[in-house]
Amino acid sequence: MAGSRGTELPQPLPPDQRTVGQLVAEAVRLYGRHVWPSLAIGLPPAALSVAVASLPRTPGIAVFVAAGGIVLTASYVGGVVIAHSPPLDRRRVLTAFVVGVLVFAPFSVLVFVYVLPGLAWLALFGLAVPAALMEGLGLRASLARGLLLGRADFVHALGGLCALAIVVVASLFLTALALQNFADNTARVAGFLAGVVISPILFLGAAILYEDQRARLTTSVRAGREAARGNGPRAE
Image 1 (cartoon, rainbow, N blue to C red):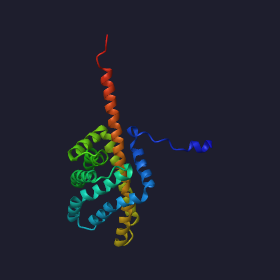
Image 2: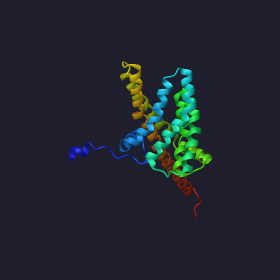
Image 3: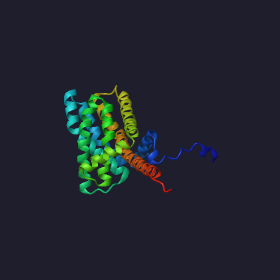
Image 4: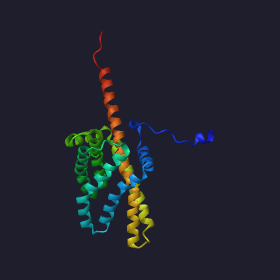
């Protein structure tokens, strides 16, 4: 028994203290608890990536810029639903979808210039999507809330998205290397299946990041109030 206790993993930190590594681990754990819904949100980005890869560079970029916002938003909304089970009334879902398309449209362009600015943009504004779903905010209020959440701990938000992206891209790259000796059609199908299986980690992790940033914002506001109280005038 003592030996088994020694090998137990440490308890996860609360959301306001969660590290980037634990964010990725929580995304994988959530995936394991909801395998089939998670695979469903992997279908749209996997299909888009195969479509883009099968085209010449310029048409492929055009297709990604045109359709990327819609496809990525659909999977992100699905990730938030899996992670947090928000109320799914029509107004919330529609607002979240419109917000997501607005947020992902610049990302679809930035990511072809350099990946880091695209991820920084998502770190600042991407949490507007779960804010719309979870908090029932309107379009402008969701965007403002997303920016507020992103700035609550920008380093954690950006680091979390970078870590999730690295895990997904590295896994897909290793899959591509393993398939490079197969015929094009076989490799394309296998690449699609790999995208379906691997890409949900990104959307689930981004949904969990909303919880982290909201907790950090609450902690920051509470600390500010306590500091203000402590610095207030004292009775003689």
